[in-house]
Image (cartoon, rainbow, N blue to C red):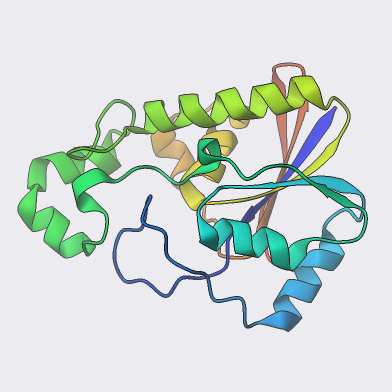
Length: 193
């Protein structure tokens, strides 16, 4: 069984959509990082999205008995395309029907120049499957993004994307999912130590 400890990166304090835009995380809450580090396995593989908010979060959590895997674009947040950097209200005004469909019927709906839930999930699933195959029975700490984590919650629970969106994933929280072959088991969602 491969156990993933999904950590959402530190807060960015952005008030707009942040997908592939490479913004930094605020990692100044060292007490919270210490509590999170204490909650995570001391011996594990550590991987992150290649966006600096996730990569820096992984750096802050890295312990002596963690083996760092290469940061990967496969664990990036959803690509919001033309919406990246815009506030929700502006997106709703600019693309009212599309933005409503994006949240109410997630799946194949994509922002202009961006990717759909299904496209992002396919990207993340392939990465997770490859790591599960390469590292069976490993503990894996993955510093990533809310959308990435929710795709795996959706997959392991066998629910729709819309149902997965009902789960909160706070910054510096841990969501634990165990995989035995193709069977996922969600053991913890949004744990904030």
